[in-house]
Image 1 (spheres, rainbow, N blue to C red):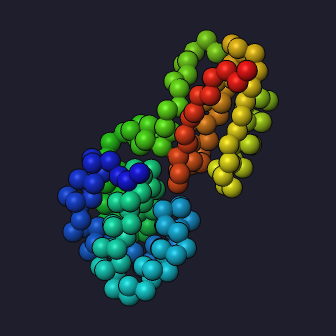
Image 2 (tube, helix red, strand yellow; image 1 turned 45 degrees about the vertical axis):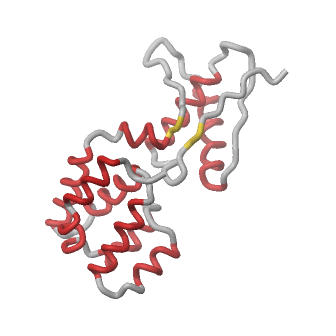
Length: 183
């Protein structure tokens, strides 16, 4: 997928500060916890030894990720105890602006849902959310079927968006495919 051009430009503009100020070797576990890095990438960056070189390698890895991972990186920076690194995290996040573009990149082809005049079916929504959490963790698909106009699309879209806000579907995104009539 890769970062959007906007985020790439922000990284380039702040490259020196990122490489010089961020204690990459100290925040590797936090980056792994937020699913920005894999276990193998943490090991790779630890082997760099030098913090600046680890920063250089991290930026290469981050450029292959989605905008959502960039925002997670900003969160890790903001959560450090080092004031100038916290400030850098806020600066990067503010420069990137609204997360809605990152959401649109991650939630591919997810239909828009009504903002009002829709009654949420709590039990149905919870069932969908639980199944989607399993799919996010282990992979897979979900098929929802029923009578036309019964609210299947709206319910599933709401569940996906709700889970996205809870940081699910960040690493691989969510692909919506409309099958149409099966009969």
